[in-house]
Image (tube, rainbow, N blue to C red; front, side):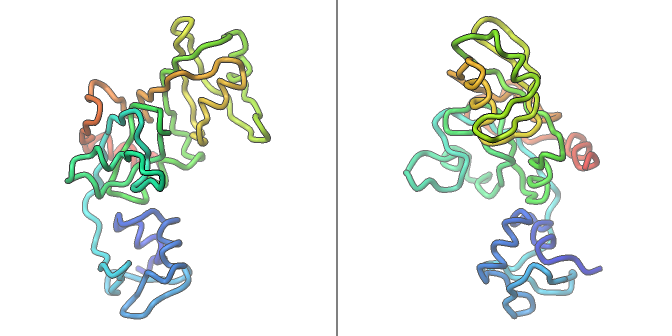
Length: 231
């Protein structure tokens, strides 16, 4: 059965489908020795697909990991400003993993990692409606939180309603499903409760638990199967 080239690459775990399309556009993909320049190209297991000089092989079993991201690390492979990245912290055997979504430089807590580019893409799609839960340490006025609970537009960007539980006068438990860039910080600042610290404790079915800062733990196959079946 023929498969679109970008999906074939994503299914191999090399890159997400979007990243695969970018690799194709940059002329870094060859099929049977011929460079291709369009994602509208179909291949099967008999074709030899090479990405950036490396032959694409059948993807190994999907692996998923929970990583406790430290503060002051960037969720990226390299940082042009020379800041420490999550890959500087991860042990060598995990440096080939892809992150699922991002946590900003100052945010700590649960960051999911995988060898499956397509899984990473699906888990971050807004249409997947996967909840992410944070503990936010805030200052300021908590009287306007209902605005965030109903949904708000900030600087022309619409943010979906958040589930917010008040733990005490400085701590909130916040659940979101969209995962827009800096969503929690932007929305809480807009309603008068700026974030001082932000810590993610869960992503969908997976909790951070007692994983030490900077450490990583493999997720069991049963949980992975449940996630895969949910799409």
